Amino acid sequence: MAAGSSAASSGTAEGDVLKALSQIIDPDFGTDIVTCGFVKDLLIDEASGEVSFRLELTTPACPIKDMFEQQANEVVARLPWVKKVAVTMSAQPAKPIFAGDLPAGLRRISNIVAVSSCKGGVGKSTVAVNLAYTLAGMGARVGVFDADVYGPSLPTMVSPENRLLEMNPEKRTIIPTDYLGVKLVSFGFAGQGRAIMRGPMVSGVIDQLLTTSEWGELDYLVIDMPPGTGDIQLTLCQVVPLTAAVIVTTPQKLAFIDVAKGVRMFSKLKVPCVAVVENMSHFDADGKRYYPFGRGSGSQVVQQFGIPHLFDLPIRPTLSASGDSGTPEVVADPQGEVAQTFQNLGVCVVQQCAKIRQQVSTAVTYDKSIKAIRVKVPDSEEEFLLHPATVRRNDRSAQSVDEWTGEQKLQYGDIPEDIEPEEIRPMGNYAVSITWPDGFNQVILNLLLSFFCIG
Image 1 (cartoon, rainbow, N blue to C red):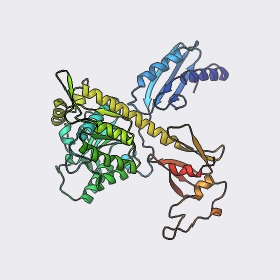
Image 2: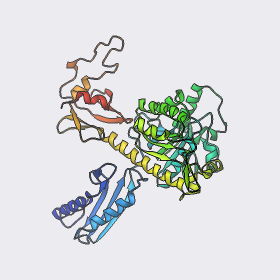
Image 3: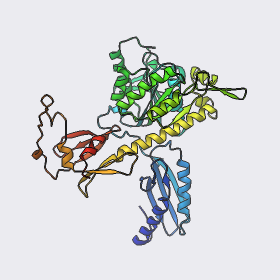
Image 4: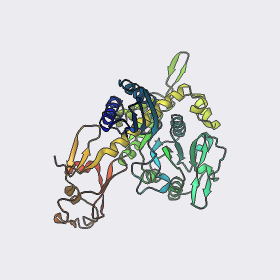
């Protein structure tokens, strides 16, 4: 809200400031920071020429927050009547895109990132832990969930002072342990070592550990996925609204075969794979670079499945040793080559998660002025307009269509032509829940909405 000598001049001053700030473009969204809604708490004192405002970014780990702050100071300071500029930086509160039906422990987590390989021994846990501590170093609130009950790695890779999970007897919840500001949950911290149990029991244990833990507000929860593509992995993907996945592989062809299964699993579950990490890709000696395990597995995953980013991790004794010592490599040597690779991976994860959230949150909205549902096509300027009554009449759930006979229970005339949705909420990355005046909640894939377009 602007404060000035008169309403007219104050309004002009506020317009000047916002116009100046609209020159700053967010490179991830391709939109100016005013349109993105980043500018908050704008205060103007024209008598003294002082301007103050807050830039609320999507994540505290934004890799270009310093650039935003500098540019905001510069563009506003250029206004002829401005004598002093005060810019403060903040981030949006941690919350998932869709929190309605989530377990209480997951309702204040902005992004959940799976690190997966679907094959054991390729360095997946090393990548998960170092990625988590890289994100924490970028300013984010981070947690790590070790989902491997048969062979938990987290207790070896980090050294928390308290190595046992505690229970909150009143809430009947699990209190994560902590190491260097990152929250940690693993079956290995439950005092049980490694599990010897059947698959369904393991799925239940993982579900309990993940959903009943008091994660609190997190910007990123990194899940170290267990190897394979079986019941445990599917249960995890279905219980948790994963924002994105990072795939870990090694150069060998055998690794590619298993990793390809994992990528296909995430694709079927509508979880975007945003990066591939090829571990143990090379080492340098005598001024030359050697590839002892061959080349091409990582790039093959990128090319075959269209995953946009590839990161190579070298063979380094320190990387292995740091994992065994309980201090992640990015903490032990924050200026080293490995830490730089993880910094680049962290920036990629932050940017891709922000893009996914932005696309999902703005993909389907209701425009009351024209009484139409707007559907934006991802990575495109194209959008469709849908008639609300058409969307409601095309519901294919058991409440509208008999599951046994296929007979249409919901008739055309049952839906008034002027019906309007009461609420539209994202569900995961590719669906929305539409609440109608009669209390019916219609869940529909964004892709299917394009078939109902007005034109």
